[in-house]
Image (cartoon, rainbow, N blue to C red):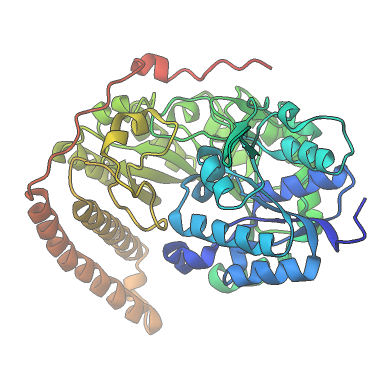
Length: 529
């Protein structure tokens, strides 16, 4: 099907460059663009020759230009990884990269197609900057239909292709107008999808980085698409409230294939919620046990789901290592304002049960939601002290288009509506406190967390009588104590700065008006198959 004029039909890429996100570049935990790899497999199933540009490990946009020269594609497609939460954040540096990549592809004579969260929210911007077409929402099938139409393979007109935006000349006018078709229904039977096109990835380069930086090799997988819950700050430009799930047997088949071909040491299940369907995790655990294959993994869940009978035990038996939960806040007032649908008591209980089962737990925490006070912040700090999670991640409330939170504060947003990179932490609206306050809060929270972890290490060493060991162990214990004192002293300074910043004159917005009760927020949106 490849045109004689071109080296390949489609060059697929994405614009999230790890190199441009300093915080995550330092953490150095790269994962291939899973959503892009699914698009590649679906295109192949339809007879197209596909090449991949993996921006995750690229040094800059010039490597995309080099890939265009090497592959000479007819279609240059930026298909963002919709399973990567960083793509959903629509970071300005990555948008800049995408616009640069569009320009490079245009100069090579390619038809340029864009898909992803930012493009779905800002189709006009991308089209006005040169993209020929934007895939709105889930773009896998739309991409195939569009290329078929442009190649003359099907008889559909552009306005008959669901989930598509483009610019059309305006009749009797020199200008153009954006045309946009209806949203495409999501792919509901995920078991029918081919596995991601892992052969397009430089697996050995990923393996080398992981082994060098962390001593093990991890890859990413996904078992679902979407999330049916109602958190009013969570952007869902791709799947909305819909939720579709692969069967445990289908997931196991991919794990067996991955183990045989790639042989990773660890898996990150990148689902918004892992194992939402009642009984799914038990079936998955049983399938893993029957196959005799168990690879340690991490995943994201909700504390209320973890309290279902047998849930944690099944996760443990399936090979779970750490479960991340969206704890968000230790204040019930803030959880209810977010329409999170969870209770602070559930956070405490789920953490206790996870630790009791020998599993680690990570907390995602969010500060700066409208109506949050210093008292609410203190409750969150106390929750972290009480629960002692094994890891934490902190963000500040970030208004993204399409959310209730965004609608509540959009009148306060200036010309800048996005973070530059994931370490920005800028308050883009008039939050309860200033940007400087929340950046200092981030420092203080992580400093206290590291101090308490260091103390646990000291106490653990004391209980094991490691203190009595000679040589290097003696030096290690002295270093631990010194580290603890360093954190303790710095934390005093951090808190002083935080208190000073909290007293700075600042007018925050009023609390967001809730659209549903806490009880309703705890119920997922009913799904129509």
